[in-house]
Length: 299
Image (cartoon, rainbow, N blue to C red; front, side, top):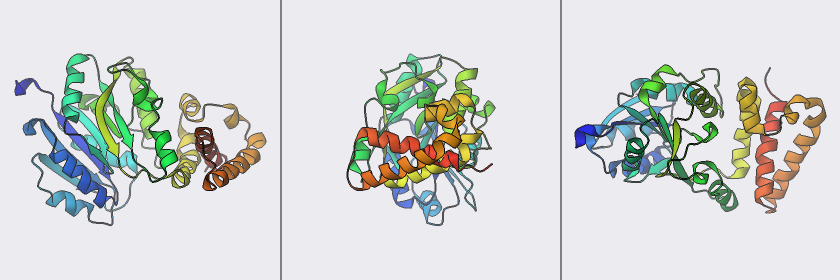
């Protein structure tokens, strides 16, 4: 019976991604789920392209809503706006540079019926990237939701807004951290607080799959990690810093580690540019880029 099916608000966050947004909307149009059970919400973070016009003019079969900020606000503010506008039972977070499969809501629906105590599910993300070595790393089966069994309880650090569903009622009472105004850490901060307030209620839904289109290559992505280390990492609690950095000694003795870590980061990036690439080098670039930003943090 359709009346017993859960309802979903699909919240899309976008910024100057009109070409990718077209592909996402095409994929949403093919979703196989009762249309009266779905609403589509697009929140635009001050784009200068035609993203808002594209969304408003797209003839979706589902109810839709759009809000555009006049200036770039950052992911926390924009995501929070989407949560406030969402009216259905579950919110599915999708980025505008992703696509979804036609059965994604069916897979989440089965998960909801299977794990009645759940308040959140993390779905799988498949990455495409012109940097093929980095793409292989991103799609490593030991990363993220891919490492879990179906419906297995997941650790909070693996709940990403890129493809996850969370109960709307929970999101309305557990606001995002408005102090995190730059890239990274906001999902982790939220998931940590969610796990503290509602332990053992977040699960894997591996067969709910979204694809991330054209993820930046490592030689672009590392700059965002420097931004994370410089701005948002210092604002997170010590538990979250340990999750991100893994080795707290690098944070506590900056006068000892700053120069060698920054030098190592530059050497590793040079090696990667010279096609000397391995998963170990990728992991070290990711770590040292965050630390490089942290050592130059804004006080």
